Length: 146
Image (cartoon, rainbow, N blue to C red; front, side, top):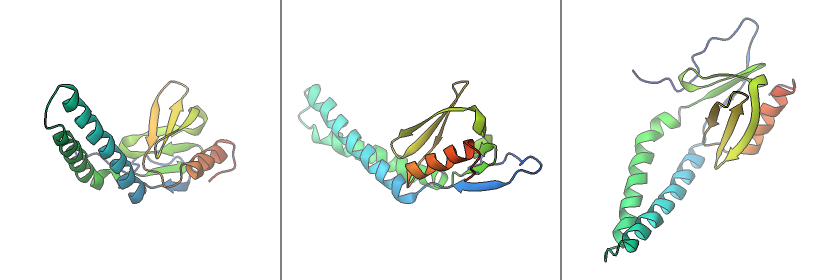
């Protein structure tokens, strides 16, 4: 089964999509560059720590691992879309989140993390402008929509 990366939850009667949140390609590649740098440093540190005389190979391994991940996941991650209506956020793979149930909104790298009153966590990943995403969600929660 191939997971749907755009909302599949039907709209309620009278409900309309006010805004769609799409991932940003530049943010995706920038995040993966940072992950690669971290993986390279960690790989080298581990090999150096265990006394391997070829610690530089940790950088090669870290870069390769993140590069494979980035290229493998790009086609799906860059299709992920969240739709915001007057009352809900509808996301990939059937996610359905009432705006009134959002307890906290956090910045997490280039992502915006939504935490519900029940503790569920959702990520709107690879945002070009996290602050704009948060402001739109906050306005919708307050009834100002979009």
